[in-house]
Length: 344
Image (tube, rainbow, N blue to C red; front, side):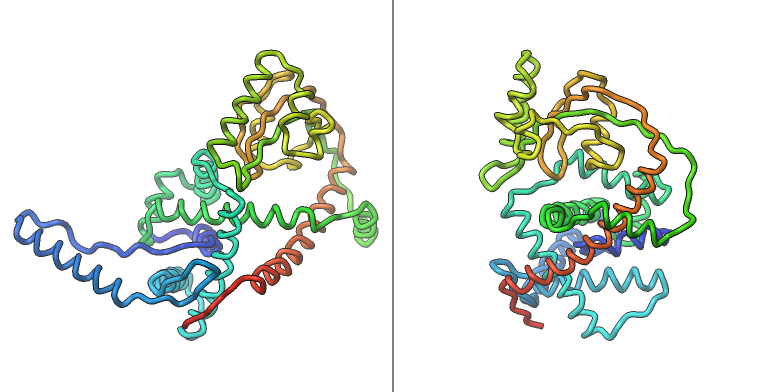
């Protein structure tokens, strides 16, 4: 069976999808034929490598013709499933290659910043994609394979997408702001809106953040977070440890204090871990796109946020619109600053 429309829609948005060549026919039982088949396969592989060529140079890396062909083939297959229209092949190749160039630039930035995606975080995201399409992970894998891909290749696509999202968030979050006046102006332009009473649980928390940096890789960051956790377990003062270790400069000077945190105000991995902690409990190292967190929940309370909820929704809508505009401008900046040689 083919993928459902929502799944295909999501897959089109993934930043790096390359189809694996499908192997046609099963292995033969007779050894001479198996040897002959292997020799033929080796010859075809060698022939393909000889015919491959560079279609773009991006800084110190390259994009190969085979990679571009794989991506175009994926788009054509998805388009056939959805019944849409594509531009002429030459135009499509140029559009796809330009997108691949932008992806490569951002992935290079992620590598330079020593950003990584751990397996736990990746598994959570893949499972979320499956669930959003009403599937179990096994059903999702079957649907992927029915469309000529493998779960391993989809996982790699998701990993690359998450890396680029990390780069984008780091760049954009400090370039976009929404003032109270912006929110008020929007609400005043939408008269007559009202909503029912709304309650949320707020959590007062504090944390220590250990970032990944060009000089601190995944294992080193994890080890440093474990060291923080051990010192706290031995009874050291949280505020003192936060001031000494935390890379979140905004909260470190205040002993790691984050104040009252509401649902949706922190990244999913952080929020999920915080929600599961008891009051005065300290977490194990929690991995997010920002690094490793050691979290302590200090207090919980239930708040009536009927009007505040409306204001927060408005704030998020304005922020998202501005972030999209800023993202486009930022991508144009990094594209102009990179060395790119198109060889189509």
